[in-house]
Amino acid sequence: MTTWDPDHYEEFFAQRHQPGRDLMTRIDLVDPADIVDLGCGTGRLTAELALRWPDASVTGIDRSPEMIAAAARTVVDYEVGDIETWEPPGPVDLVFANASLQWIDDHPRLFPRLVAMIRPGGELAVQMPLSWDQPSHRILRSVGAEFGVEIASPPTLDPGDYHDILASHADTEVWVTTYHHVLSGENPVFRWVSATGMQRFLKRIDVDRHDDYRDECARQIATAYPPNDRGETVFPFTRLFLLARASD
Image (cartoon, rainbow, N blue to C red; front, side, top):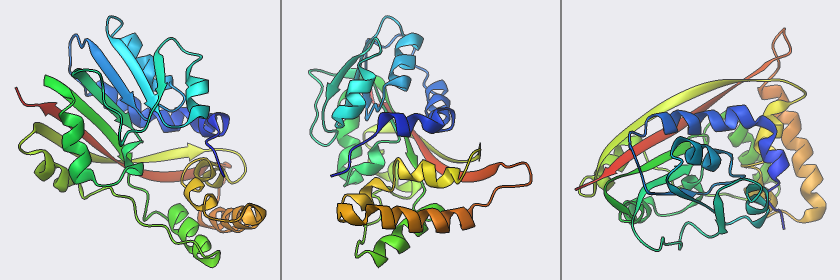
């Protein structure tokens, strides 16, 4: 069974965390008392939430014990928990979910449930990758099919659908941004996806075939994302952002 590797995930720390920081700047709460970071990973952004609102009680939730073990090195409270079933002990002012909800099914049910955790006037702040159709992830799927693995598309909906889902629960703003990450080193896009999206395939492939799967993905991704004359690899990556303010 594969597990999350915090050090591998953090290899492209600046690029992975920029969308979360951009989302954070759009949150306009003045003095929240309780903040929850769902899918906190290694806790870097959770700690930044605590720095921005030092008087708030901040809790990071992640279902990966490896990630929580890394996050525990910071000053915030962390818990191992599953977003699908976790409930706060009481209403909170901010639910922050950066690059985590795309792993959770049934968004028409999930998003109203999350908004219901928030006090009137509080906010749900979400960022999710829209990477399913980009070349790197198409390669993961096509090679996976050669190994007998078919992965369902993520549960992420069209941006406008989230307005419809939350219309009776919150005032909602949704936008989409494409980042053009400039990466360095050998085959950096492969290194990027092997820490995240590839894990869904490795969990379904026999361990003795993992290297074969990785090698073929690496070969095809290197062809799809060649470096430029400066040795840089540009990796376009589109992400969906959502802010929902709970109705008073």
